Length: 387
Image (cartoon, rainbow, N blue to C red; front, side, top):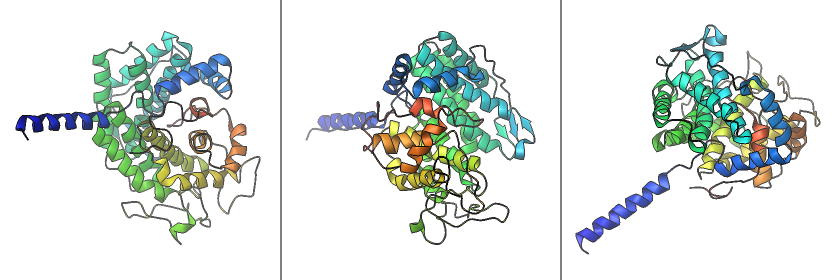
């Protein structure tokens, strides 16, 4: 066979491989058809989006005059001591995402420009990264949310100049990635947030290596975060081999299906980890990789374990476990119930009373609006697709 022909075959093969490795944009939690559906549902008054979007618009995060508070260095100590820009940065990242969603639905350019103003403010100011003990988890939370906003504005509008987009991308690469790339041996909510952040940043930067690093981190930590009886008498360990805390200050609870690693700590931290686990799987799904299928039984068990003890089910909780409604579960419920038709009966009774979910001060935001009963809209290969 002539060498020239072999060369052309090789080039063609490389081109096919390159196309296969491309990311879909927008593709962090949401895709183009998904965004269009949200806009249509609000315009038509369809629930749960109508009420959920009204809550979003009433939030201070949606004020078109919102002003960011960027810092050159964000220092976050344990228990927020010190808090030098930590809450400000988290608020600003959620505000950017909120403004981007508000713009998609209303078409009001003030929201898009507000999102750009926030993104640019941090990209032009943050130079010293995230320091002190909680610096890495701070970087993870905000690097999970920034790309959600940036993907929408970059790929759905023409308002953000390329030079500013590049500067923002460089900020993600230099001010966030170094803090999260090596993961965490502490409580699972931290490493799962880092996994989500790497996946989201990888999509925005079109960086397959970062995306794959996040997927690897997720695959290592996810089965160690939610217990199933088949795991045996002790929960699975993360790749670090270090045993995470399944109790709190000496208190423990019996191991049952769906118990989260931090359930005894408090419901908020337990569900911060759950939300990161699910958000990462959702973005991977948007890119054609079905992480849900790898640990779907654990995710469903975690939802059902919690829902059993929440209204209107309201069974007495296990010893030393406190449960309360949280601004999450909607993304996972949509995937398993609405996309796959899987039975999640206890959570199905909880979801209506938990709507509309809002935005916490970390990385959970507007799940009822974005994913309430949206099904498989815009997914590249359908819910069963994987690569």
